[in-house]
Image (cartoon, rainbow over all chains, first blue to last red; front, side, top):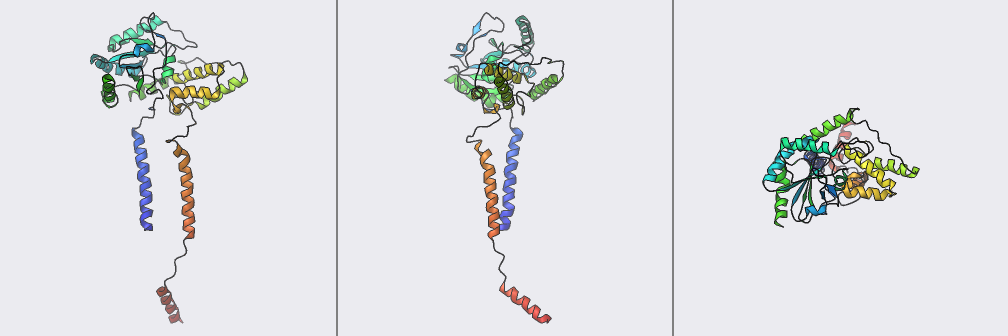
Amino acid sequence: MKKISLFILPLILFVGLAIFLFQGLFSNPREHESPLLNKPVPSFILPDLMDTDITYTTEVFVGKVTLLNVWGVWCVTCAVEIPYLEQLKNDGKHIVGLYYDQDIDPDFGVKTVARVQQEVDQKLGQLGNPYAYNIFDVKRDLSLDLGVTGAPETFLIDKQGKVRLHHIGDINPRVWQKKFEAIYQELIAE
Amino acid sequence: MMRLLAFSLTFLLLLSPNVFASEETYQFETDAQSTLFFELTKELRCPMCQNQNIADSDAMIAADLRRKVYQLVNEGQSREQIIDYMKQRYGDFVYYQPPVNATTVWLWLLPVIFVLLGIILVVRSRQQKPVTQDKAKLEAAEKLLEEDK
């Protein structure tokens, strides 16, 4: 009896530890649950990236299911993601860009809007344009309120303007199937 | 993977001194505010980097959070208010002191359970009496002794 437990106990401990560590191999340490889930998008008043006379507020999300994609021309992964986003757009998905610039340092740097627009035009000209329009997060305030840690990140927003999914990293066919497809269809049907 | 690559590239860029030469200088009205700022930037965790506080990190998000902390401190917000502000946006992850809830309670319980288990094991092994000698064996031994005489 005692001999068996001496053998079994360490074995159980070992297997438990092995399973725990094995899971760790596949977990994404940057993934953590968004505190914003099922809450409305934080209020904002921000200009359109291409035409700064147009301003957007949370009103723009009401009435349709939106994919809000955080990106920038300086972001390498975004460039990889954009062609797939364009496919999604062609499938009828409503994709809105939340653009922020890395070089605009609210405290020090100055970069003209015209320069940013030129860079964006050039980039989207190369890669294709998946965006219905781009919201220009001039000082990255909305990004901060949304809990954005970098780019690319994507928010799935329902018809009431509530955040239903926050994805950190790029969207590719695998991520779309695993994470977005089911909940997207659900939201469309609502 | 691409993201990791992008991140390491950005990281390399940040390392080279010429790219980000701007030094942040924050001015405070009172010493208490300045102390609060430096304490908070040490206790708040950079959401982008794995284990750096926002004072330590060069990531853009860390700079943005530092600026936000500065702004909130200057508005006269208390320590708890600022921590709550950050938690509302970046979750419990952003603060180094985890809250006690159903998932994290094990961090406190497990060590206690291990110590208790250890104590139980030690106490039990002490209570066990030495093995009672076998009568037959004793007799055999005595016989041997007898024979030796």
